[in-house]
Length: 470
Image (cartoon, rainbow, N blue to C red; front, side, top):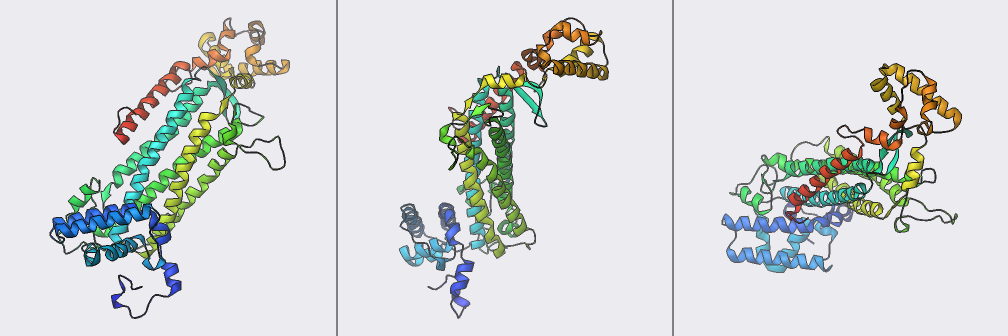
């Protein structure tokens, strides 16, 4: 089959070159964007007098027909077409005749792929942002019902201070809030149209790039044609943001793995989102969070791969950038799946509040409150208060009880500077609610944080979808 670009070549491409050079079997994912961009380009060509009204309609109708064939699975993708752009153009010409050959006027595959890929990335930017907001919504719904559920807060994975379970979930949601903000920033920065830039230097036609940008939903055209065809920052921005999403999902997944273990038993995963062992019939394995953890490396790899492709390229288009897409496609597919299954895994898990409270009674979580009491009520310097508290902890250890279970008389017997009323600050509920500073774990503060994040989700969903009922 003759190549659309083959006029100056005497020999046909070798079969090995076709296999090596072709991107059609992965960039066919861009067919929607390629047809969208081609329609806009055809309208622009009509606007500047290159196409007649009938030619425009023939091209648009032909592109619609090709889209329907692809959607029905009837379109045959061939390596001889090299890429999605030439596949669609060849099919269009076969369908409507020589008029189809006019479509590539004032356009290069260089700006064509730049606009297709950018449209694809921006489309999934919105989809993933929506999934993140839905995940936040689910997390916050659980958090709202567990602001009174006491659990051990940990540092170094050691029991530290009492917190409520809702507070821990708000911490997760804060991570995803930053992901949403990052993706919105990416969208704003990259919502610029490269179409009309030509191969690298613009075109001799009077391309109306402002019209093209508006037609395709961009804010404005890109500034410089050479930069436009070689820029893949939008894809790198996406991969970096997705890497951050996966890092946050991985941290959540790690806590789910820990919390579902027999040692913690804070939660149980639903049978719908757990698996068994082929040899040990008693096992219930947290395979979903483990896979969520593992897939983060796959997305990081896509980011590093594209950075390596781009780092040594001269400006304008280079064939190396054909390697920009597969990693992005794979990362997007996996992040979409991870966000969906993470939300369902959280919505269906069981929460063992009694065991959380029982574990909060281990490790003297209210010890800091005793030190603060000595400073505040007994006029003891903090370093001395720290030492006295350590002695009280040692006394509780010798009796095999938590510091909160000691009587007031026992606590006061350790040091004469300890005053009456000390017992009241050592109960876990008091300790948790004492942390009522902005951002703290007190019920009042946790509820305020939940409300702030709920408002954020609501506002961003409206911004994203335009639906005030969301």
